[in-house]
Image (cartoon, rainbow, N blue to C red):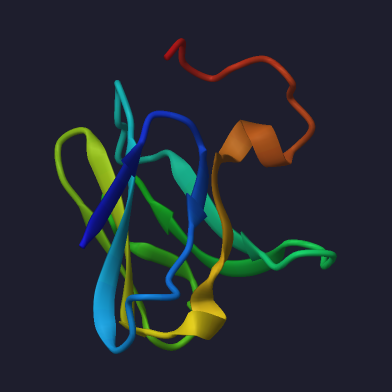
Length: 110
């Protein structure tokens, strides 16, 4: 099962998807191997939780939460959640490096 969204905010309800791999896809117009990507998950009423960070090449930058994998294609980044459970229902965010350093200008026009 794959969810595709053109923005950096992905809302995923997994209530009917148990023990399946779920792929969250971030579509990106111009992908550079040196870009840094940061993925977060936010449960209702809670602050965002860091999940994984990686380069545009797919190389991991920080140790991920277990059960997560990154797959990079030409213009898409897939965050794969292995054996998804109801507890994985949350809002997922993907941020590119300048957006987490306080830069409010878009890095790329989408």
